[in-house]
Length: 394
Image (cartoon, rainbow, N blue to C red; front, side):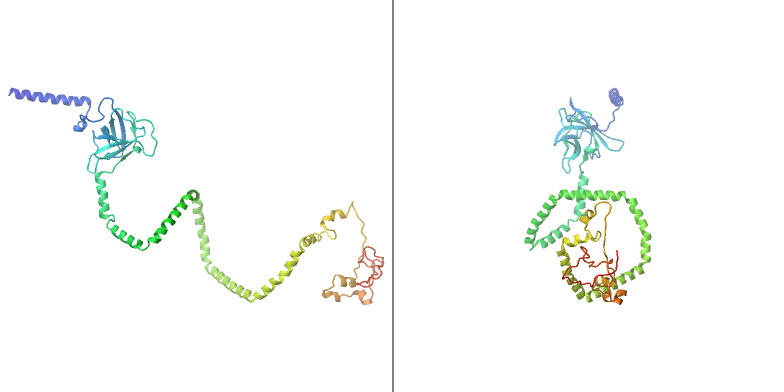
């Protein structure tokens, strides 16, 4: 009886000692995994601790292994949650473990039904920077979680049951039927596809530039959304007016159709005349072309008659000039000169014609069409315009 009492007293004392120790150290009891297990990596002298923020840790627990390229280099010391409900994993690594400062963390799994572990690795596609040291943090953007066994089996079930696996046989059957007997065409098609792909590759810069241009156009259009919206809103009254004028527009189009028919009829009936007129224009245009610079040069005399443009400023020197001229303005003279070849040539008479005499020119004898010497008479020359005028005019 006494020995049993003593034994119970010793057990109570041990329990009290353990409870006191836990209370003093502020530790919680979460099973054996809350204690460092013998032989666990990352618990020896010189080990260092880093922290990784993970979106999910799956079935990871304390003392789960930490690996680098399938080699265990440490273990998980603690798993907690931050304010955003992300897992904060504290990892203890063996001394001498070397990783870049921008290393990544991922939850891996040994096999389909195997245990999970934390995989640390250098970054992929990014140059390593620095060295991972004790107290460093691997942020959430460099952490990933591999699919769990449950997720993998669930996805496989979807593929096998409702993912269209049964239709693969139909697809392969129809594909074989399409290819059967068309091997030559398909053989020719492959080089053409190669040429097309090569051409697209050579024009890659232009394609990218076109896409950039479309992007800029889209941005410009997006900036003008208010303007486009107002334009479309203001366009509504115009469409209403067009709708109200539908009958008038229809009548106008019908009239235009009738006009087109009449114009076609007129052109068809006058085709021969048009062709003849165009044909007759040929000699005229040829003559104008043959005139060359002569026609152009003669036009310059119209506004500076009687002197050409290029000698106009050399015709008169000084401030004034003397001019003496004889003009025969009798009806008969005008009739035979200015109106020659016109219907008026034989219809003008005047007093001189009635009397049978012609007026002179300033009381002088001579022909006004010979300005060099009006009084000189050239023997043997016939006057085609009748006797000299006897009237006077200046």
